[in-house]
Image (cartoon, rainbow, N blue to C red; front, side, top):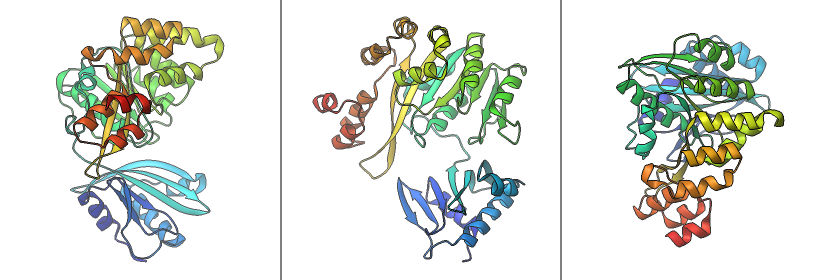
Length: 353
């Protein structure tokens, strides 16, 4: 089968697709507004996917195709002038080669058009501490992080270091200096890059994902010592996020970690993508800002009390996921049924609506 890769990439960009799927036994497909749609008439064979994926590596000018064939997994990103930027994950499945390409726009998104709460963007004013953006894969965590980093870049004279796998959004220097490092092409591991970053006079460090105990430990220490740390976790809700971080450590260290988190945590933003009335997608947000009351709850391990504090602290920018869904339903962005389906407490949200 003859497939023009550049034409496919252009088509995906023009149709505002979020992903391209290259998998054996499936027509070459795109995800548009949350729906997977075939874009070729015939099914891809193993030779087809291998050829297309090899072409992607050539277009990305990365020499790691042979290494990918050996290891079975690879992550990288590349840009095509006047078309877009693409985040690529290649993998082996049932002995054949497959890939998923995430389309990332060249320009940084407008936070207001994405529905990102003002309180989240206002976090750019913080000079130190740990800010976490959490949620499932594909919920827009990287986009929210990019918006916060762009606000810092536009308003502060700082050195921003980003450590990502791979780089999604490209930041131009504005008021700040922005150094962006990609794993593994610029540094072999997250850990090595973070340790190096601390010697590169950073004011702000973005870690694409907090993956293990050592990464979390360094991030907490850096946040305590005057750096602003930004990162993501695959968790739902502030209480679950704090629980997950504490649980990474052995029980003998957990109280110390609670104390560190109580002191250094600035905010936890949790998000999820929900289908809209017009068959599009929108993000719903929970926002927890670390106050004295929440800090005490973290220190004492009373995480079950955090949700009620978020619920009663709307005046300082906090909001629960359920209140975000209710607001979206009342504005007509999503249906009442969608709000109930995606809520943490369906009975409460039914009464609120």
